[in-house]
Amino acid sequence: MRAKLERDFDRFKRELPRDFPAHVRGSYRIDLTARYLGELVPHPIGKGSGQLSLNPGQLEDDAAAGLAFAVLKTVIAEDETGTQTMAAWAIHETKMKVERRPAGAGRAGWTVSWKGRGWDRPFAEYLALVRAGRDLTRGGRLLVVPSVKYHLPRLAEPFREGEYRYTTAQLADAWREPPLLVEKDFSPTLAGDALADDRAQILRWLEDVPRQIRAASPIPVRVALKLMNARFDDAFQVEMMNASAGADALVCFNRLFDAERSVAYGGWDLSDRNLRVLATHLTPGATPGVPALTGTGNIGSGRMILDYARRGCESVQLHTFFQLPLSEYAATHGSRAQRALHALVFHPRDGLLAGMLELEARGALERQSGELRFLDLGARAHRAG
Ligand SMILES: Cc1cc2nc3c(=O)[nH]c(=O)nc-3n(C[C@H](O)[C@H](O)[C@H](O)COP(=O)(O)O)c2cc1C
Image (tube, rainbow, N blue to C red):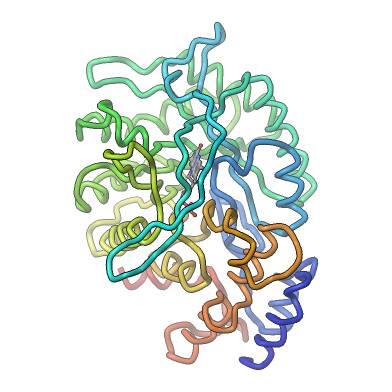
C-alpha cells in the first residue's frame, strides 16, 4: 500500500485522476464518501466561504479540480427596501496578504490577513452567483451552498424578520428545488464586536436564528451555523454548540480575532482551540441533540482532516490552504485547489489515505465489507463519547 501511495503521489503531481474518489475506492478499498449539511459528497474536502467563491469562474475551477463542495462568500441580509441592519459587514476590501503566523512550540502556520468583511456588491449579483451554483449542483459537478449574515439583535430587541424573509425568499427563488441549503455566518469580526460582549445575547442568537430562517423560508430549508470563536473560554464554546441544537449542522469554528491588529487569523492557534473544544464536546452528557459537524481551521494535511473527523466532523472546509505560494505544493501542475487535493489525499506520510491506513494498522479503524470508510471515523467518535 505504501509503495502504491508513493507511486500515485508521484504520478498525480501532474494531474489528478478525473474521478479520484473512484480511483481510491478501486485501488485502496477506501470509501471517502462524506457529508455536508445532510448531503452525501464523494469526499470530505470543500471550500469555506470567503474570497475564493465570489464568481462563477472560481466555482467552475473548483468543479474541474474535483472539490466536494463550495460555500459562497457571505452575503449581508436585506429587506425588500434594501435595508441591511448588518450593513457594517458589507464593506469593500480587496487586498489579502498570505503570511506566516507563529504559534506555540515553534510552529509557524499560515494565515491570510485581510480587513474586509461580507459581500459588497448588489444582492442581485449574488443571486446570479447562486443560480450558477445551482446549475453546478444539479449537474452533479459541485455542491454549492450560499452563506448569509442575517440580522442579530441585542437582547431587548426583536429580530428584523423582514430581512430574514426577503433574503431567504430570494435565495429560495434562485435555488428553486427544495431543500434550500444555507449557512449562517457568525464571523470573527462579529466575535470582536461589542455586539458579542454578552454571553446571554450570543446564546439567544444561536437558539433563535435557525427558527427565524425556517420561518422565513417558503420552501424546506437546512441550516448550518458557522460558529465564531467567541472571546470567552472553551466551556462557553461548548455552551454555544449546545445552544445550537436547532440547526442541522455546525461549522466549527471560524477564525480567531486579533483585537490588537484588528484582524481575523488562523494557523495552529486556531486548530488547537477548535480541536480542543470539539474533543470536549464529545464527552458524555455534553451532546444533547447534536447537529452534524463540519470542521474548519488550519487544515493543510490529511492528518489534520483526520483530527477533525475523529472528533465527529463529517467533512471539512478550507480557505488558507488554497492560497499558499505555489512552491508550497508538491504538485507541479493544475489549479491551487487541485494541488491542494493532491497533497491532502495522496501524501505518502501526511495524506488522508496514509492516515486512514495507519489507523487501520493500529486497530483504530476497521474495514466494513472489505472497505475503510471515512464516515466511520466520526461515528466511532460519537460512540466513544
Ligand atoms: C480572506 C478570508 C475571507 C473569509 N471570508 C469569510 C466569509 O465571508 N464568511 C465565512 O463564513 N467565512 C469566511 N472566512 C473563513 C473561512 O471560510 C474559513 O472558515 C477559515 O479561514 C478557517 O479555515 P482556514 O484555516 O483553512 O483558512 C474567510 C477566510 C479568509 C481567510
